[in-house]
Amino acid sequence: MPASSVSTAAVGVPSSLFLTRGAEKWQKTSFLKKKRPNLMTPSPYSSRARIQASLSPIEIPRQWYNLVADIPVKPPPPLHPKTFQPINPQDLSPLFPDELIKQETSHDRFIDIPDEVIDIYRLWRPTPLIRARRLEKLLDTPARIYYKYEGGSPAGSHKVNTAVPQVWYNLREGVKKIVTETGAGQWGSALSFACSLFGLDCEVWQVRASYDQKPYRRLMMQTWGANVHPSPSNITEAGRKILEADPMSPGSLGIAISEAVEVATSDPAVKYCLGSVLNHVLLHQTVIGQECLDQMKAIGETPDLIIGCTGGGSNFAGLSFPFIREKLQGKINPIIRAVEPTACPSLTKGDYAYDFGDTAGMTPLMKMHTLGHDFIPDPIHAGGLRYHGMAPLISHVYDQGFMEAIAIPQKECFEGAIKFARTEGIIPAPEPAHAIAATIREALLCKESREAKVILTAMCGHGHFDLASYEKYLQGNMVDLSFEAERIQASLAKIPKLAA
Ligand SMILES: Cc1ncc(COP(=O)(O)O)c(C=O)c1O
Image (cartoon, rainbow, N blue to C red; front, side, top):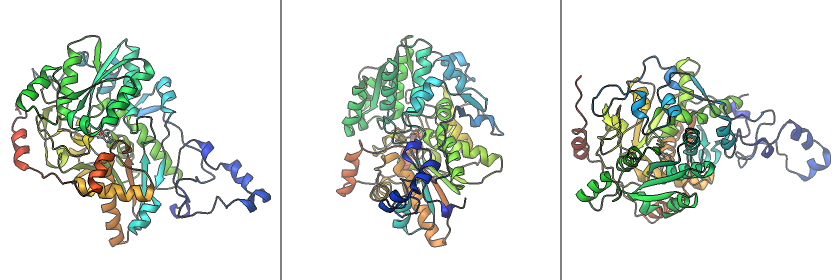
């Protein structure tokens, strides 16, 4: 099916919403035909509401996809924070249940998704793949722009794709309480939602900057029954140390991780969940890319460029890894592009080195692109992108040359997000606004070069609880926080020195 003849691109949402073969027949009955508009005629205003009559809806994947199985050079192992030797699986036991530790170190290509998890995924999966026709029109570009939208989940982002299985495995191994950190508040909400479904207690350290900017995210977590603290807090030693040095600290994901890990390691009844960075988190997110591969095939499209924002890397990996598998097999050759904020440029300006995942140095050392574990990024509005490091697997894939990265300042991101909201209707979270800004850059280049590239973008969450940042932008009060090379150099100097 040539792409130009496809009248729609909302693929893979529950079939009852869309035309099926039967509906096509029904539409041909004469008395209805006269009264109703012809639903099969492509219209510039119809991109969300129709599906090609001959397409059957796509399924939720039954397995997660593990890219580690297919990359020729395997990623370097995590190291013990004291001995600097590769960690044993049991070193992770105070933090994670056995099944997640197994997944973390697995080289299996596919891992079965438990039925109980799929049952819950059905609340929002499969998620739609939507062609952004109105945005294309606004930009006057020949590019075809598609976005995979994860914002229809109960918590409003992709984070629930991993929160649900993480809580499920903890429940199965008898854990009663889970602790975590949250940057944008999206991960904390996702985990609170999953804990409420399975009846586990949930305690969340929310980065101070986001706790202050987003009271409704906190209330969402509390509605689902979680106990929420601003981080740094006085509850933990890690938090108290930071507050002694800077009572006004805006916090960071690295600090909040230290607080949650400290609580988990001091109580055997408590385990810790992480919303990004680790292999098993990236693994769970591959439901996004697997569905999207099927959806693109169904409409006869092949992406020339795949774009996603990167904080710890999970939504980007979730969309891109199944496509990287196809690329490694020589079936397709898209450019895969990560987008990060200029205020926290771990891929584009960080070192590729062993570093701690948290500020206090309690986690294993991971080889990753890092700005240094005590780097505290400026309080940009994309709280979920304020992390000093990058997923080790993404860092490795980047190092091996399978993907590229760029950094974009926040004002350009909000400018893009507003264009997107005013054409496509969805108000993006500030994090995927980075992917949208990069998509717009590329679409405008296509306009100049007259290339009809297919651009696929990860739209990983809505911004309904980020409207204070939109207000700032709309009132002209948003600033681009400057990139300070010296500050990054100072924190890079504190990365542990390992013998070569
Ligand atoms: C909506 C949204 N997008 C993206 C991110 C960044 O995380 P990741 O890179 O793991 O997708 C976050 C993190 O909180 C988020 O809330």
